Image 1 (cartoon, helix red, strand yellow):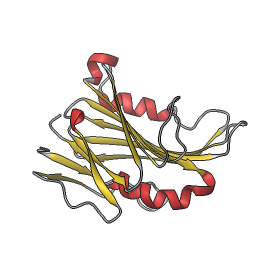
Image 2 (cartoon, helix red, strand yellow):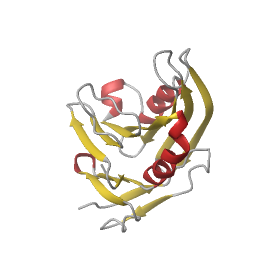
Image 3 (tube, helix red, strand yellow):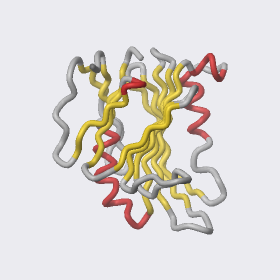
Image 4 (cartoon, one colour):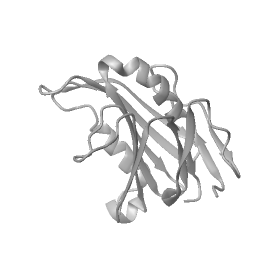
Length: 193
């Protein structure tokens, strides 16, 4: 089902930076206790979904979007705690920029709004992957503050752009990140997509 997969080991700088990317063949490893694998067949990927959480996919012409959330996503598409992954294939044909350049530019804008504060940034290369991570605090006047950890990921081999975001209310961040870190660290992407 999943062939030539990369296991993307990514961590927020709160704990550790990205550790390694491993090429794995065949079936996925056994999911850790409290999680199960959620296949993303349209983009040949898989993510860990915590037991009791919700999954939603929105498949568009240019972008596939996946949501793994603590709350069920209702009309309007908002959630408080969870991970979203947006995937754009053939980036250069759509943006006239190489995937890595697009990811770098996209990441450069993160956390710069007047109600946002950048907590840290990190750039990393793992084989054909270029990762641009920004962790920031968002404190809009009309809502409680959130912590948002955003990765703009480019696969230079497949010309694919991934925008992965884990977010949670600031007051719940430490507990939510215990799940989020595992979800992010164990993301599996196909190297031949």
